[in-house]
Image (cartoon, rainbow over all chains, first blue to last red):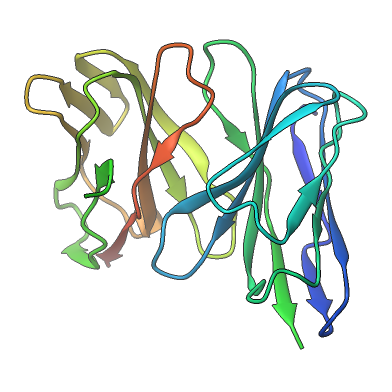
Length: 111
Length: 111
């Protein structure tokens, strides 16, 4: 089945710890995105990548880092510099004029 | 002023009612308009996708775009309890890699 997978579904982070969220797609999409969703708020763009080995900062990139070494994969690292990381993280992908398709999300909680 | 405005609700209706969900926007360059449905703790799923102005119908769902008024709507006919979810509007311009999302409207359909 084609789609986007995110893992883990739930993640707990201790103070000062870096954690990495996985996002994989087998849709052969060129562009991939990371969003953060907080209760009662819309989706805020963290980073996006149009092609392999290239990515751009979104609206709230501080405290986050990404890599795009393969077309299928776009992992997000939440660093200790992100002071308020508790949120629901969504990965999405898109190709051409098509619209975005989302993964199931990862819920990150700071302990 | 946000680029996309969406009433967060909640909106509560009885089963079988016609539901009207709306968004306004300020950027006249937007050409692609989407509606996503998001169940609690899940990733958004694409519901409707419209290019430029006009109407699009899919089963019980109708999407309308009025570019002159910068206003988009989603109508749900014969609403069901399973329609209870958050509905996100989204839009982007031609060639754009960033999609702008509304905050989402929470809908409750009572049996």
